[in-house]
Image 1 (tube, helix red, strand yellow):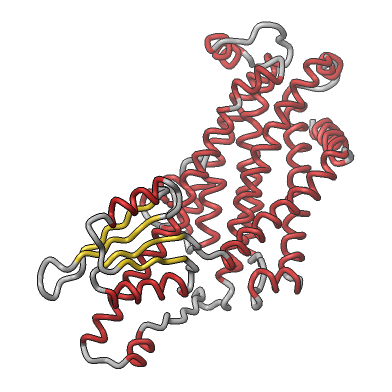
Image 2 (cartoon, rainbow, N blue to C red; image 1 turned 120 degrees about the horizontal axis):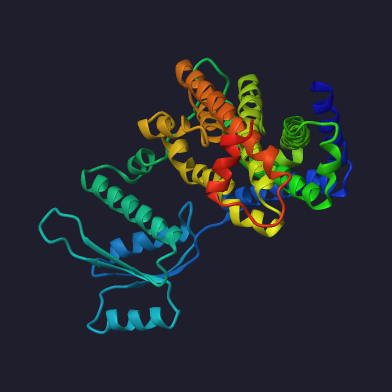
Length: 415
């Protein structure tokens, strides 16, 4: 039995790694990912909001302070028109400029409603999607009003500037060197690698089955090999290709991010991406379990369908759980140990991605990791049991796509 599985897996592995598509994808995907990540970092570091705004206030000093803050602030390089004091036609004129796209927004500052209170602020912008400018305006208002309050308390200009300097925060994990950013970057990159490889190679298993059903190769192979051996060989062979490709990508990521050129553009003293031993072990474990789960489902889908078009109609069963993991990712990143994160990471279809991310970025109790592995193992066994029964009937069925009652009969009577 194992010799047949090994022979089929070897054939699937060699057939795929020798293709031009494998070579191109192995080189092109990390290049595109590096370009995307590097480009995002450079844009975030060097881009400043450069909107054109107007600040309207009867308090010319406050308006001028805001102008200086927005034109020369840390994250903004805007063009600010100060209107002080406003006239009866000022608001109508500014609204006309907004409609004509000659102004990106205006800030209207009214006097406080009571003595000692804060001024009333109204901000109107041309585009509701311009969150960066809105954030810069909010930050500038907070800075200027806080500075004014401090000076009203009798502090000197120098004392106020010293107090408002941002604190430098050095973050480290307990008992470890200062490499939390590098570890987070590694976890983030490997999360997306795992997502892509599980989805792509799961679908490759389904496509491989459809190709062999179409060419009737199965009918020849079934003379000497059992259906279960064929399915196991395909899953192992295609999975080995994915693991090979991920290994090359991870090695390339480590080497590239430790080069002087990348370190220079990413941020001078950047230590690059680094993988801890625990990250590598958990990545391999959760990747293999996730791949087994999704490739078994893909094998069942491939056996039930007769063409790529039919497969596309059913691939939502593979894509939707993975897309759900992407939706849950912000919650995991912001609060990895809150109750919702714990529950989501124990759902078997989400465990490979979400539990891996949790253990990569925060300490997770050992019993939660053990529970996730046990639940995954039970689920994989159940999915493989159902899939093997669908597979042994489905690979010999041609023509009409089976409906749900027929699939249930395949599972029930196939022994």
